[in-house]
Image 1: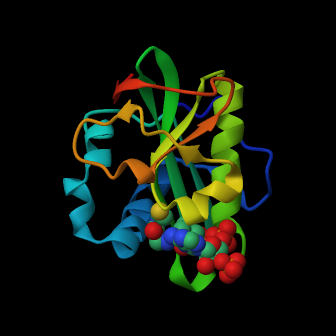
Image 2: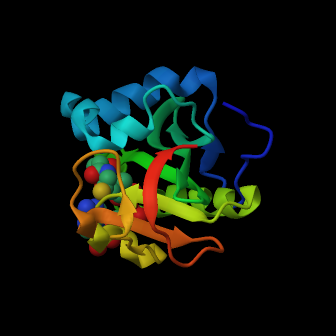
Length: 164
Ligand SMILES: CC(C)(COP(=O)(O)OP(=O)(O)OC[C@H]1O[C@@H](n2cnc3c(N)ncnc32)[C@H](O)[C@@H]1OP(=O)(O)O)[C@@H](O)C(=O)NCCC(=O)NCCS
């Protein structure tokens, strides 16, 4: 993972992920999603790929929040795929999730990609401006209402989503 460009400006609680965070991130994601996440369509955009960036929140040296961004193409549009995002149960509803998403949005602008794609709950992500992108075709089954796009310059997307 490259860290040269990923220090976010959103808040002093959010840091660029380092290799020392890997175990903590894995444990956090496992606790939040369970082992089933590897069967998900989203995982097909991550396996064999390398994150563009990762952001974490830490408390007493422990990872309590994590998000990763992955390089993808949506049709002809270069973009970032967001996920997984997770915050430790004991630290939820304190705005960490929002700060992690904000770090991702800033990273998309910094890298000059068209936007950020994710598969997730619209009731959570629409507050950041994510909108359904039913024309984006994921490499596996996905509820189109959960395929969400936030523009960083490209308003509408269509076509196959692949590792980019
Ligand atoms: C989603 C998640 C990362 C949010 O982290 P967080 O630090 O609590 O986020 P914030 O503090 O910015 O926002 C919390 C608010 O979002 C709401 N919220 C959380 N998940 C939500 C969801 N899936 N749908 C709708 N609202 C949601 C909370 O109820 C809370 O509302 P409140 O402010 O009225 O209490 C965290 O709940 C989590 O790790 N969930 C399990 C993993 C997961 O489902 N991740 C992907 C979501 S699709």
